[in-house]
Amino acid sequence: MAEDSPMTEQQQQQGPAAAGPQQQQQQAGGKKQRARARQVAAELRNGRPPLWWKDRPSYRCPACGQCCYKVPAFETHILRCCPDVAPPEEWRQLLADAEAQQAAQQAAQQAAACTAADQANEQAEQRPEAAVAGAGAAPQPPQAPGGSSGDDSDTDGSSRHSDQQQGQHAWQLHPADAAVREWLKLVEQREDEQRAKALDIAFRQRGADGEPLKQGPPEVAAQLGLPLERAAALLAAAKRGVPLAADTDHPVEVLYEDDDLIAVNKPPFVITAPKHRYIGGSMVNRIIGTMGFEPLTLHRLDMNTTGVVLFAKKKDIVDKVHAQFRRKTVRKQYLALAVGVLPRQHFTVDAPIDRDPEDVVARRVLPDGKPALTEFSVVETIASADLAGQGTPASRSDAALAAALAAGGLSLVSCRPLTGRTHQIRVHLAHAGHAILGDDLYGVTGPWIGRHALHAAAITILHPRTGQPLTVRSPVPPDFLQAMAQLGLQHVPGAEFSPAAGEDDGTAPAAAEERAEAGEAAEQGAHAAAAAGST
Image (cartoon, rainbow, N blue to C red; front, side, top):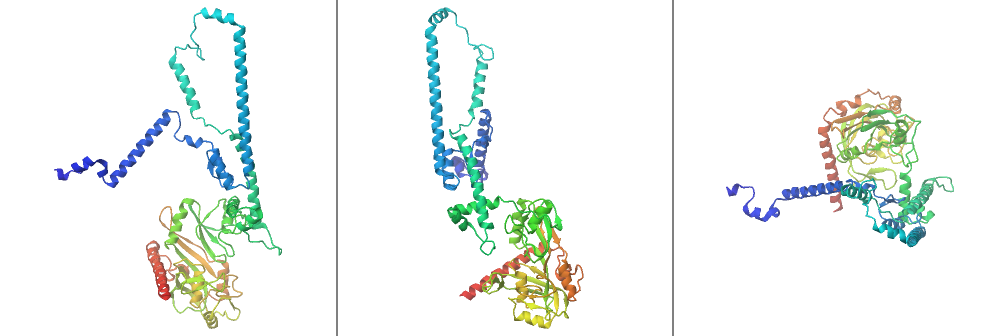
């Protein structure tokens, strides 16, 4: 029977040290809980609430918001953090004045006490007979403040205990407490003035040609005479203090909305998020102006790309949605008008993308670039579209585009990026020899459309709150349809969402992992090829 017991005799003799890690952890947790319970009980018996420390007086730095509970600690922090608005000489003079005032008050109190003692002695000397006559009388018991006799020890003890309880938790303030708080109001005003100057330097100063100057912390530091670290913190705090601009003149087309998410239809020539807090013109500013709340950006579209954009309404779901983008489980579908007649109905472009060494904006396919994978499906095609007569090849176009222009034709293509590189769809279609219509970098421009013909038609995610698949679709924009009609390409509504075009048939969540694995495999293969080439 001894062999079947949970603990052997030797383990029992060794005590807790012989127990397993899980049992030791449970025992330690139980000890902490019991100790905390005893602490709370003691605090309640003493009349102090468990969160007593929240009422503790503190001093907050106007520059960075750091709180200190003691004047010496606050002195060390604020003189190091922002001496430009909190000069050390002012601080030292403030403390010296407070000490002098405290010394004067103590001297006055001592003088008053001495005067009162002298007066009491004089009165006692002037009435010696009354004191002698009163010595023969029977002593009377002292009366309590409420009228009861001193024999009521319980009442007197309770009163003393109550007085002790009331004064027990009164925080002892520094002699300079009132002066420090008044001085901090002046420091806050100076900090606001410094922030306003930093914003003017960084964003509102103009050069000799009248154009805005692009300036940052180095320029702020130079003009205000501050260390670079302080200037960077000052400018960052100033930008955070400026509320986002609200665009009230532009309505927002809402495609989907619930308590956590909102999906809107982005028109062309509008950026997704603002470049600066005080400059509007983005979808975020339009949502603020028309719907009254500040959305949280989950992903972005290029300025000239139209279509569905998702925003979060609550902070706790942002990380959950971003995790889906990182795992490549978000299913995105774009529509593009591609130059020429594509030879295959379905094809995949697996080509790494990196910055174009000859253009700061453009991207191009390079062997040592970042892995990029895109699936394409042809939705509709017209071979008779003549683009060469009125089209102008873009600056970064190549011979393949020239051949496609000469051959003629136009195709409506459904695009599914499995990775998220900048200009990925535009670069991959150009790499396949069928650049996007209207693309002023890689394609051909003309009178048909004033931007690249790329539209974010649909997006599918797992709802961060419910875990259920959520698909949001965006209608094809008018300028896109007008370009198709002008070139003779008939559009059948919904054709881009048909199973033949790769539309989501309800298996998106199950296929998401497969697409993610395909994207990861492409990345690994590209890295392996790059490593082999380097060797």
